[in-house]
Image 1 (spheres, helix red, strand yellow):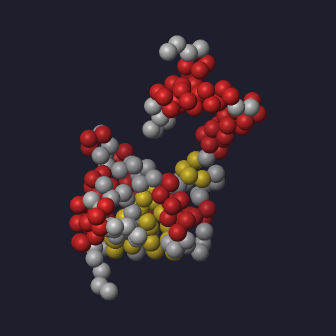
Image 2: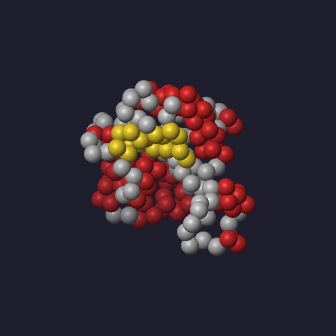
Image 3: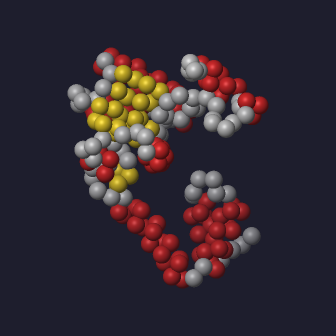
Length: 198
Protein backbone atom coordinates (compact mmCIF):
# COMPACT_ATOMS: atom_id res chain seq x y z
CA UNK A 1 0.00 0.00 0.00
CA UNK A 2 1.21 3.47 -0.84
CA UNK A 3 -0.10 5.94 1.71
CA UNK A 4 0.34 9.71 1.53
CA UNK A 5 3.52 10.77 3.36
CA UNK A 6 1.80 12.19 6.51
CA UNK A 7 -0.15 8.92 7.06
CA UNK A 8 2.97 6.86 6.37
CA UNK A 9 4.94 8.84 8.95
CA UNK A 10 2.13 8.46 11.51
CA UNK A 11 1.94 4.68 10.87
CA UNK A 12 5.72 4.44 11.34
CA UNK A 13 5.43 6.43 14.58
CA UNK A 14 2.71 4.15 15.98
CA UNK A 15 4.78 1.07 15.04
CA UNK A 16 7.52 2.28 17.40
CA UNK A 17 5.16 1.56 20.31
CA UNK A 18 5.39 -1.92 21.87
CA UNK A 19 2.88 -4.46 20.58
CA UNK A 20 1.78 -2.30 17.64
CA UNK A 21 2.17 -3.99 14.26
CA UNK A 22 1.55 -2.55 10.78
CA UNK A 23 -2.20 -3.29 10.71
CA UNK A 24 -2.90 -1.81 14.14
CA UNK A 25 -0.67 1.19 13.34
CA UNK A 26 -2.61 1.82 10.11
CA UNK A 27 -5.94 1.51 11.96
CA UNK A 28 -4.78 4.01 14.61
CA UNK A 29 -3.44 6.42 11.98
CA UNK A 30 -6.76 6.44 10.11
CA UNK A 31 -8.59 6.86 13.41
CA UNK A 32 -6.49 9.97 14.11
CA UNK A 33 -7.29 11.23 10.61
CA UNK A 34 -11.01 11.13 11.48
CA UNK A 35 -10.62 12.76 14.92
CA UNK A 36 -11.63 16.37 15.57
CA UNK A 37 -8.69 18.73 15.22
CA UNK A 38 -8.92 19.91 18.86
CA UNK A 39 -8.77 16.26 20.04
CA UNK A 40 -5.65 15.66 17.94
CA UNK A 41 -4.06 18.84 19.34
CA UNK A 42 -4.90 17.72 22.90
CA UNK A 43 -3.50 14.23 22.18
CA UNK A 44 -0.23 15.64 20.85
CA UNK A 45 -0.03 18.08 23.80
CA UNK A 46 -0.44 15.13 26.21
CA UNK A 47 2.47 13.34 24.50
CA UNK A 48 4.67 16.44 24.78
CA UNK A 49 3.65 17.06 28.41
CA UNK A 50 4.74 13.54 29.38
CA UNK A 51 8.20 14.18 27.92
CA UNK A 52 8.55 17.76 29.23
CA UNK A 53 6.89 17.64 32.65
CA UNK A 54 7.85 14.23 34.01
CA UNK A 55 11.20 13.10 35.32
CA UNK A 56 12.50 10.24 37.44
CA UNK A 57 12.87 10.71 41.18
CA UNK A 58 16.56 11.05 42.02
CA UNK A 59 16.01 8.91 45.13
CA UNK A 60 13.83 5.97 44.06
CA UNK A 61 13.53 6.23 40.26
CA UNK A 62 9.71 6.57 40.19
CA UNK A 63 8.12 9.00 37.70
CA UNK A 64 7.37 12.38 39.17
CA UNK A 65 6.61 16.01 38.40
CA UNK A 66 8.73 17.18 41.37
CA UNK A 67 11.97 15.73 42.67
CA UNK A 68 11.98 13.91 45.06
CA UNK A 69 8.65 12.18 44.42
CA UNK A 70 5.65 12.34 46.76
CA UNK A 71 6.43 8.88 48.19
CA UNK A 72 10.03 9.72 49.09
CA UNK A 73 8.92 13.06 50.62
CA UNK A 74 6.18 11.46 52.74
CA UNK A 75 7.46 11.45 56.35
CA UNK A 76 4.73 8.95 57.33
CA UNK A 77 6.26 6.17 55.18
CA UNK A 78 8.21 3.37 56.87
CA UNK A 79 11.81 4.20 55.95
CA UNK A 80 13.13 0.87 57.24
CA UNK A 81 11.68 -1.06 54.25
CA UNK A 82 12.42 -0.67 50.54
CA UNK A 83 10.39 -2.59 47.95
CA UNK A 84 12.47 -3.16 44.80
CA UNK A 85 10.43 -3.27 41.57
CA UNK A 86 11.38 -3.49 37.90
CA UNK A 87 9.25 -0.70 36.44
CA UNK A 88 7.56 2.47 37.63
CA UNK A 89 4.14 0.99 36.74
CA UNK A 90 4.83 -1.64 39.42
CA UNK A 91 4.92 1.13 42.05
CA UNK A 92 1.50 2.29 40.89
CA UNK A 93 0.12 -1.26 41.20
CA UNK A 94 1.58 -1.67 44.71
CA UNK A 95 0.16 1.70 45.79
CA UNK A 96 -3.32 0.73 44.57
CA UNK A 97 -3.27 -2.07 47.13
CA UNK A 98 -3.01 0.52 49.96
CA UNK A 99 -1.33 -2.04 52.23
CA UNK A 100 2.36 -1.28 51.77
CA UNK A 101 3.63 1.77 53.67
CA UNK A 102 7.37 1.58 52.98
CA UNK A 103 9.58 3.11 50.28
CA UNK A 104 10.36 1.89 46.74
CA UNK A 105 13.28 1.49 44.42
CA UNK A 106 12.63 1.23 40.66
CA UNK A 107 15.27 -0.68 38.70
CA UNK A 108 14.01 0.34 35.24
CA UNK A 109 14.53 -3.14 33.88
CA UNK A 110 15.99 -6.50 34.79
CA UNK A 111 19.32 -8.21 34.25
CA UNK A 112 19.16 -10.01 30.91
CA UNK A 113 22.49 -11.13 29.42
CA UNK A 114 20.69 -12.30 26.25
CA UNK A 115 19.56 -8.71 25.66
CA UNK A 116 22.89 -7.22 26.73
CA UNK A 117 21.46 -5.77 29.98
CA UNK A 118 23.78 -6.03 32.96
CA UNK A 119 23.53 -4.77 36.56
CA UNK A 120 25.20 -1.50 35.60
CA UNK A 121 22.46 -0.84 33.00
CA UNK A 122 19.68 -0.77 35.59
CA UNK A 123 19.33 1.08 38.93
CA UNK A 124 21.39 -1.38 41.02
CA UNK A 125 24.26 1.02 41.90
CA UNK A 126 21.73 3.62 43.11
CA UNK A 127 20.05 0.97 45.30
CA UNK A 128 23.37 0.05 46.92
CA UNK A 129 24.00 3.73 47.60
CA UNK A 130 20.61 4.02 49.33
CA UNK A 131 21.36 1.01 51.52
CA UNK A 132 24.14 2.93 53.24
CA UNK A 133 21.32 4.65 55.14
CA UNK A 134 21.20 3.03 58.58
CA UNK A 135 17.39 3.27 58.74
CA UNK A 136 16.92 0.53 56.09
CA UNK A 137 16.40 -2.89 57.68
CA UNK A 138 14.55 -4.89 54.99
CA UNK A 139 14.57 -5.18 51.21
CA UNK A 140 11.48 -6.70 49.55
CA UNK A 141 12.28 -8.10 46.11
CA UNK A 142 9.19 -7.58 43.94
CA UNK A 143 10.70 -8.29 40.54
CA UNK A 144 8.68 -10.23 37.96
CA UNK A 145 8.47 -14.01 38.43
CA UNK A 146 10.30 -14.82 35.18
CA UNK A 147 13.91 -15.74 34.41
CA UNK A 148 15.11 -12.13 34.23
CA UNK A 149 13.23 -11.06 37.36
CA UNK A 150 14.43 -14.08 39.34
CA UNK A 151 18.06 -13.63 38.28
CA UNK A 152 17.88 -9.92 39.14
CA UNK A 153 16.45 -10.73 42.59
CA UNK A 154 19.16 -13.35 43.21
CA UNK A 155 21.93 -10.98 42.08
CA UNK A 156 20.72 -8.16 44.34
CA UNK A 157 20.23 -10.51 47.30
CA UNK A 158 23.85 -11.72 46.96
CA UNK A 159 25.04 -8.10 47.06
CA UNK A 160 22.81 -7.08 49.98
CA UNK A 161 23.12 -10.09 52.33
CA UNK A 162 26.67 -9.18 53.46
CA UNK A 163 25.27 -5.83 54.62
CA UNK A 164 23.19 -7.68 57.24
CA UNK A 165 19.82 -6.58 55.87
CA UNK A 166 16.75 -8.79 55.81
CA UNK A 167 15.84 -9.77 52.23
CA UNK A 168 12.37 -11.06 51.40
CA UNK A 169 10.69 -12.01 48.13
CA UNK A 170 7.04 -11.63 47.19
CA UNK A 171 5.29 -14.99 47.37
CA UNK A 172 4.59 -16.83 44.13
CA UNK A 173 1.86 -19.28 43.37
CA UNK A 174 -1.77 -19.72 42.47
CA UNK A 175 -3.98 -16.66 42.05
CA UNK A 176 -7.00 -16.32 44.32
CA UNK A 177 -10.02 -17.71 42.49
CA UNK A 178 -7.86 -19.71 40.05
CA UNK A 179 -8.26 -23.40 39.18
CA UNK A 180 -5.41 -25.89 39.47
CA UNK A 181 -6.13 -27.30 36.02
CA UNK A 182 -5.27 -23.95 34.38
CA UNK A 183 -1.99 -23.37 36.25
CA UNK A 184 1.30 -24.05 34.51
CA UNK A 185 4.00 -26.27 36.04
CA UNK A 186 6.19 -23.37 37.21
CA UNK A 187 3.28 -21.69 39.02
CA UNK A 188 2.28 -24.97 40.68
CA UNK A 189 5.89 -25.61 41.67
CA UNK A 190 6.20 -22.16 43.25
CA UNK A 191 2.85 -22.59 45.02
CA UNK A 192 4.06 -25.87 46.51
CA UNK A 193 7.45 -24.41 47.48
CA UNK A 194 5.96 -21.36 49.23
CA UNK A 195 3.01 -23.12 50.89
CA UNK A 196 1.95 -21.88 54.33
CA UNK A 197 0.52 -23.56 57.38
CA UNK A 198 -3.23 -23.17 57.99
